Length: 225
Image (cartoon, rainbow, N blue to C red; front, side):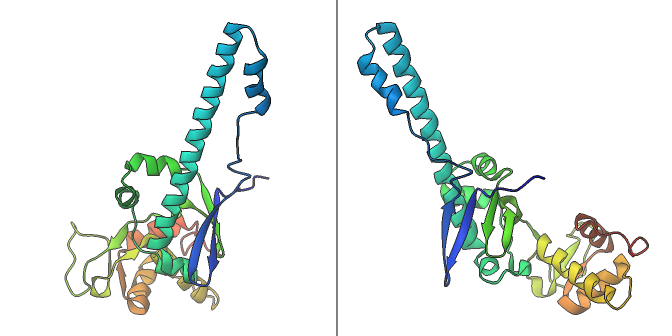
């Protein structure tokens, strides 16, 4: 079996959060004292030069790891600050739109640096273990419900133009399917779309419901047991 080892954990004390790097995932490295002692005991000039070069390479490698760890912590602090409502409540619908570009801009680093920093990495918090990428999500809508929607506009809108995230909408879909499924009812994608509007004030196209349902690994109404 494969186990996910989180790169870091987000620990909460009251309404304050702290980031702790997992030492199993990013161990503390140092240059071997024995290797450094060899410089003083080696008389051969070529051997001494070789040892010095290897020590310099090791220190450079350790320095890059330390910088990587520092960047991970800084990125996670920005994520926690932006997604504080989620980390306080565990409610996926409280996630707000957030991009890697925003984080990069705030930290004054390149977007590709943020992308490399979070790629394939996980973080643990009181609500579970999440891929860091999970907290980056674009707004799925900003269009007021009262305005007619054209084909060039977003497939999703929320009442009053309040932004919603993909994960928040998917959580609502999951709740609807669980609620109605418990009563033996199978909801079509169009019915889910209608209920999202009626219950949550979210206007979402049927095709987008189908897309999000597939991402949740939930079959269509015809395939559900």
